[in-house]
Amino acid sequence: MFKTENFYHANYLGKAGVTERSLYSLCSLIQTHENLDYALLLTNDQTHAFILRDLTHNYYIIRSGFTSGYFGEGPKGLAKALTLLGKHRIETEEILVSSKLLNKLNSSSLSDQDIDFIFQQKIVRPIRLHDYIYPFKNEVAQTSKLKPYYPLELPYSIIDDRIFDLALLFKQDPDSALTKAYKRLEDIVRERTDLNEHSTKLFSQAFNTSNAQLTWIVPDKSEVIGRANLFLGTYQAFRNARTHREKHEENLIHQYREFLLINELYLLEAEAKNRI
Image 1 (tube, rainbow, N blue to C red):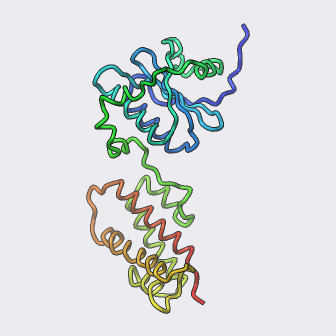
Image 2: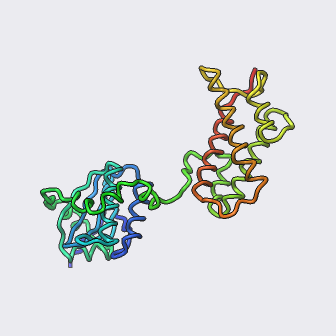
């Protein structure tokens, strides 16, 4: 029997019948693939899956973890998924598919011909995507209820090289990574300036005096003051508390925010010039 080869790059995500897993997969995909431009909702009766396409025609398939036609987690998950796609301005349309094709999708066995067939199907008209959202409109309208589905990750592409190792450590031990980042930054500034101070006093002398050794070449002097105050404020608000008090059950999101804040201090320090 003649067997065709598959050349399309297709990734299968989510799990059939499991709404939460499919939602997490969709949000992870959206967060890590900025060039997604089109999505198809594949509908078989009251069961739904997605296939997304990016600008280079790679395909991302979310198995049928979504349902419709009643009040429950499956339909609510579908409403959330459609809302998220809309928020990210990913054009979304709907087609009808057979149970046989949906089973092939769920078993990760779509051929290139199947994918071509899917994208050649007639789009459902009139558009009824909003009908899936409407019963849950109040809940999905709250962005705070959608954000937990996005994976918590540090944006490694903007992390300063000098704390990249701490960004990797952060996943296992956020407190240790943050504490080391604060201490390392002080060491860097002391080495550049030959100052022997610590914490806010160090940064005040390094950046925030009339004869400070480090400064930024910016149009307005107030910008220099503002940047210097970022160092002082960050250490006063976060580093001192972390050093002097044990934090019980610290909020992980707050730790991510704090790491990105100190990363910004590293980037600003790297941009600072020695005063001539």
